[in-house]
Every structure is written in structure tokens, then in C-alpha cells.
Amino acid sequence: MRQPTGVREYPTIAPESTRRRFYLQAIYTLWGAIGAALAVPAFVYLFFPPKVKREAEWVDAADLSKIPPNAPEEIVFRRNRVDGWKISSEKATAWVVKASDNRVVAFAPQCTHLGCAYHWDERTHHFLCPCHTSTFGIDGNVLSGPAPRPLDRYATKIEGDRLEIGPLERHA
Image 1 (cartoon, rainbow, N blue to C red):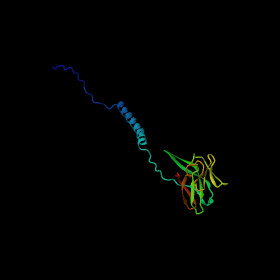
Image 2 (cartoon, rainbow, N blue to C red):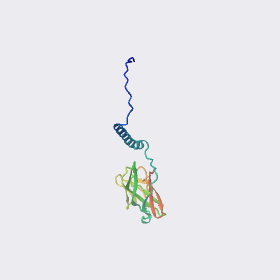
Image 3 (cartoon, rainbow, N blue to C red):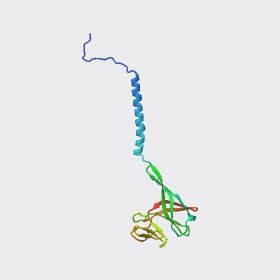
Image 4 (cartoon, helix red, strand yellow):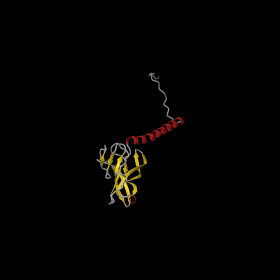
């Protein structure tokens, strides 16, 4: 006869492949796949931001044959602006002065004092900011007023008879 040891023994049962176990494994696998599908793009978005190349964008702005020499002309052109993931096209303007030897200068349309819009005064042959009475010569230099520096300029290049405008260069 056997002596009781105080430990009760249970018969071992081999785990069966039941329908319930199959469905639980399928549900957990599906949850894992959904979690990975959500986690991977979030991980990439947070830890690997897009590398935007800040190449100078050149925009076809005007036909030079239609711009008279030594007379400022305000031109309107469209430029793309990148803001994070969003790229938007916006209207921009520039004051273009064509010298007689086909050299071109394109001024930004904002006064360097407080960013007001200025205009060309045909009577005095100066750029005039009506808000604070700053005046600029046809070369963009300050003639009078509170403006601290000359007008800012766009980079320009000529391709045939077309004027292309590049990035804004702040005048020092």
C-alpha cells in the first residue's frame, strides 16, 4: 500500500485544439496586426520627419519685351509655398525695373520700415510708402523717411525674353 503524501495528483490532459482556442488566437493576431498598422506610420511620422530640400524655386514671371526700360512695372506671378506637408500656390507681386542694357531688378513689394505696400509715384519718380512717408529711389535705396534699409530684392535671371524670379534676398 501507498502512503499518502498530502499532495493530490491530477491527471495531465493534453491541450486540445478547440474552436474557442482557434478564435482567440485569430482575434489576438488580428489585434496585433491592427496595432502594428497604426504604430509603424506613427513611429515614422514622429521620428523621421520629411527631409524637404530647400532648393531655390524659379518662377516664370513676365515677358521682358513688354516692360519699358527705366520705368518700374508692378508684375503679378504665382509661387508655391511649402508649409510642412502642405504645398500651396499663392499670388505674389514684385516691382520690376529694366535697365536699358537688359539688366533687371525685381523689388519686393513691402516697405522695409513696417512692411507696408508702397507704390511708384510718377510725378516724383520715386517709390513712395504712404503710411510713414518713406521714399526710395529707382535703385531701391532710401531717400528719406524712417525706412532703415533699401528695398529687398528678388533674385532674377533672364531666359530668352522671359524674366524668372527666384528667392527673396533681404538687403543688408
